[in-house]
Image 1: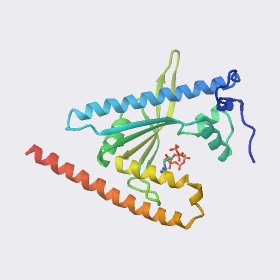
Image 2 (image 1 turned 90 degrees about the vertical axis):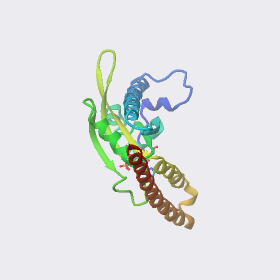
Image 3 (image 1 turned 180 degrees about the vertical axis):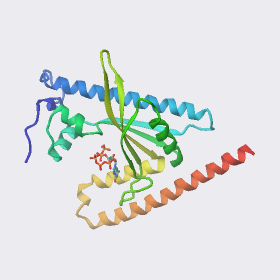
Image 4 (image 1 turned 60 degrees about the vertical axis):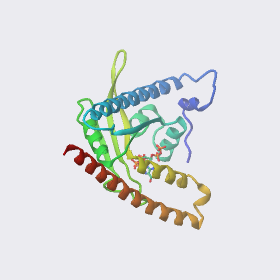
Amino acid sequence: MSKKQPDWTAQLIPFQSNPSPSAEPFRHLMTYYRCAIMEVETKFRVLDVQMSLHRESNPIESIKTRLKSPESIFGKLQRRDLPLTLESIENNLFDIAGVRVICSFPEDIYFLAEALLRQDDVTLIERKDYIRNPKPNGYRSLHLIIEVPIFLQNETRRMKVEVQFRTIAMDFWASLEHKLRYKKSLETNKDYDEISRQLKNCAELSAILDRWMENIRGQIDGAREI
Ligand code: 0O2
């Protein structure tokens, strides 16, 4: 059963010249999430620079950020049969603000995650380690839901942010697998199972490659110190 679309989804109408008044609080909330993304991204940029002082290269290859679209927010609330209110967004959806940190080596992922979680103003809400416990399809990534403060003109708000840590190989794999998941035409096709099987093999091979290259880096670093 589909619910009546709330007024804040007036934001969905592109180039609307006269947005509904109740779309304004939604826009504010999205701005707060955008600020939280900036806070978290800055934390990683600082850690990257500081960690590079003690080694030859930076631990972070790249950082990608995204704010969930109003369409996806509305769809997720509907699918979960949750109230279509701003409170419900804040209380139930923890991936409105997303930060993806791509590293070269798995061990850098854990260094960065622990360094982030040691910071006084960061609270861990949830941790899912799909690197140590990969999903059945082969997906690997470390996911943290954290809460960070954003300092506004007259108040401090605590906002939730989803952080995903991946190696370059894990990210490469996830984007290919994402294509398969959204290829509706393949779902009923026998090719789907075959491609899923091949993807799973690729995930295992790329995990071996990640560990192997990490080991080589260890050998290079060890040789340099002698
Ligand atoms: P998008 O557009 O990337 O945000 P939830 O997010 O709470 O609905 P779940 O499954 O408990 O559900 O969350 P989980 O496991 O932490 O995964 C959330 C996100 O991780 C997904 O967001 C993907 O970005 C990524 N992810 C998880 N599993 C897979 C997978 O098997 N393959 C790929 N390619 N990505 C995965 P969204 O909402 O799917 O999309």
